[in-house]
Length: 356
Image (cartoon, rainbow, N blue to C red):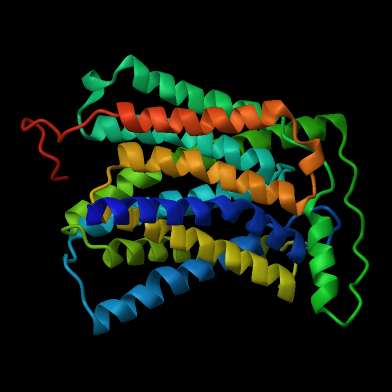
């Protein structure tokens, strides 16, 4: 009973944190930009990496040093856990790029959270050698999740960009007047089509990466005797390399129309912290007996609901929300629940022990 309570508490923690991740991060992107309506990409990504460095490396390392915990460091566990962290970091990059290419949290995040469970479920079942145990109701749940996410995107309310919210917050905390930002250049028809393609590819990158995140990280945790903090440290290391060191060189070589303004930096760091705490929630859920095949669909089913509520509230679009939008959200939740109930159960067959 205690493990069940901890399991669903950990899932709820991740749902909440990852639900507010997208809107918070985009506010950081606009807060750092020096061109009107053009979100920054490299500097907010660096802030995400720094947040993971604090939450995913410093804090758990201190806890391990002074308190310790069960589990052990293993080479296999390091490889799988760092690979899982790399998937998480690439997914975060996909989200940032999708926002950079004109995507909005109100539909980007539901699309990602709708598509990632499909990747997650099939990868988990493949790694456990349970492909033959997939039933029609399980597949129906996955289809419902995807259809719900697409409906959310198509019926998403449109209104003032988050930039207006960032500027309002900026005026409340800054005494000096804001420098006038140059307007964004107008895109031609061919450029608009290319931007649309890049936006779709960015969303696909986030879906694939975050879909693989849970199963890969679970393998790393299992290889470390179900340690909680050691895999989190590996995730933090992967984020630090991909989100801090790599963008540093891009900023030096390519530059960017952005700066580390206080408000934008705060929101980007906060978004990264939400992502890191959500990753800890995933690890705690696995440690409490949860399996990726149902933990991740529950997370990906609940997070878009929180994301949408935050995104709609921050842009004051409640009056523009259509019934189709709510219907899409309901489909996402119902589909995720169906995946949970109908997921293949049991351990991998003895012929292929899960020791890798």
